[in-house]
Length: 576
Ligand code: ATP
Ligand code: MG
Image 1: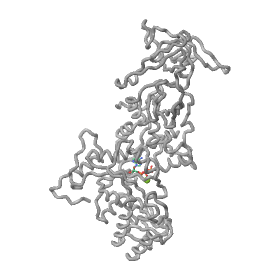
Image 2: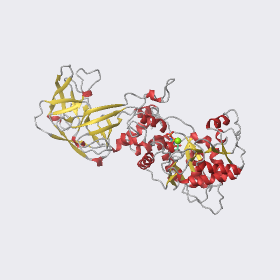
Image 3: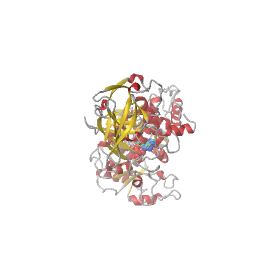
């Protein structure tokens, strides 16, 4: 399957930069460039989503491969919608997919649709019929399955396999003209019913289906199958390397067969491993079920592994790209730890997220010896990882909120935060010592009374005495209220598909995947935080402003907590 190259042909494709780690896909491409497999044709790839759902992080891997590898060779990438299943496809999906690809940081050379090629595909189908390589079959879908045989038994020829060419041409044209009911006939390639590869046993090329298509409306009542549309679409676009996930490996002989019979541009399919992540489902069909059954608040729910859900949760495109690059490509499927994805998320947010102070579960602290009505401004560092981010002023006053977790009336062993008689540091503030508490009727501590040491302003004692902990706080009278949504894994099982007999992945949904905190207290600098902006709430984690926010009624999503289990695991194994 090579194009005819003359010795004078010079590949226009640049070799890949040496600095990038190699992988087998890039090696194949480099080889094809150096052997002039495609002559002067530039490297061309495509990302071919079916618009039957929102993109998920598995697609991010394919996108990074398709766009990234083309880029390495100064090639081009098309975004092509594989829209051959009108019943499942919608314009909403077409739009969200474009937004997500752009957000991830890629731009396509051309925006294409398999439906752009319906006329051409039809013409090519006629050619295969004329060449005696396709026939109209009247078996029902169920009969087609029966005749196909199994992995261990050959199939049986369809009784319609030897129809005369003229009859096939007539019937196929009448299929297109709408003369037969849905499902009554199919067009099938005439290959080999005894092939060890089931895909080669006279695969269906067209089925009759009266369904309105999101682009072609009711023009067609026959629709091409994936196998008939995909390779030919690649070829029309002069795609040199058609990368796809491993489940298509068995389809490759068929991909090649169609292209060879038609004698068209010899696109080359290469398969790589499908991304799978623990505690995560990566299947549009199953994600659609979560949406339809209202198990989540739509495709963009921050618990969803969709790119739009992850964006809303606070993921950065850089974190996703770095993760995908670290995962790499392989020829066998594996499973990646969710902790690894979160590690790359934290690593990126640590660099870019401004630090702020926020109290999720507030406990009032009154500093009895601090002058009533006095307000000081603590100078707080915006990002210790980025000096250019500067500092900001945070108001400090007599009444503060601290985290309920940062106080214990009876401290357990090893607990060094605030407790009666204990001195701690208030971040950017003073040392305070707890003297007494106020309790409600239920016996719960509702207010903690403390004394501060004015000499410790800024957080250090002139006499050099030490405290064992530093806690964050928000000035009570300056605090702004916010709703904070705390997310945990959507599924409680590492493999969400591992369900008991008679159950499915729905049974593995984590009932505690969302906790809503209605009255968190934030430092006032956040009053105008715009939807989509990301912060580190000191000591708590990374948070992102949700689009549900309104001025005066902020909503934050917890992107990820600070604890980095992955870094620990790596350290243990002597990695990075
Ligand atoms: P789903 O099962 O979620 O619907 P799909 O493979 O049917 O996925 P498509 O829209 O057909 O989704 O896929 C577009 C491209 O993305 C294909 O090339 C496919 O191989 C790739 N892709 C989809 N899921 C993954 C994944 N988890 N890992 C890597 N590539 C993927
Ligand atoms: Mg699919």
